Length: 349
Image (spheres, rainbow, N blue to C red):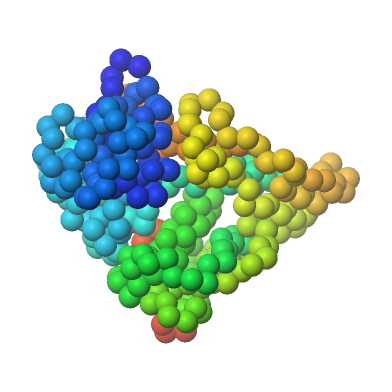
């Protein structure tokens, strides 16, 4: 790779440590040029070759940096993204993209005006378990798909102390945080729905933001996509449940990449995360007039695929893997879900 893209990361919290810095540092087409840490020096142990900046202004004012990763709290995405693009930088913006769809649309236009690329970060498109259900759908193994459920459940009964995620700030809560992944996957698989119904709530005492949601997306071919998350789920149900005219498919949330990154494993363009030790999918359907019931094991995903797609988009005129327009759609559906829950009715889209 002849072209090396100098890249700066706006924050070195969990997102920066796990989901951005290791991939930028390992990909031969990028250089991890600078990292912002306001008061700490955590990045020095692993990335001493990068510059350490104390403010985002310093990073954006570094004329050598071509790509800025905006991985700060969502409430700051709009202002930082606008500043970076007006300075001529390409940007990757963490999900959730913005607080409002109006902000999202403005950022898309600012990117066009400045002739820079805007990428939304949706790494869950590169999960092994998502690949597994996409493969079942693409091969039409269940006949005509009638219903799909996506669950993203956790058990966290104690506050994390992160106000931007759990407080009463705009865009806090799991609907923006986890829901952004689930809605994005639904849109990738099935496109824009006809209508939405949603039930959202705060189940845990002392929390200021949504920690429970159930959405139903309605499609004109009678397909329904149910999206659900609870933070009070000690025992998890399958992450994906697909029901069709010929059969069913259950898929666990089993991708190993986050676990491996937490353990300090270095990612690469080649397969680097292991497959699950046990089968994580169950297919029960009819193939060639024979009933088939068997366990399946998903192939490992690779988030490096996202960064490689970003690199090819910037250097080879390849398609943007997650353009700003995709981010706009996700935020619009979140806003429609909030409206539906508040008014207790189906919202036509």
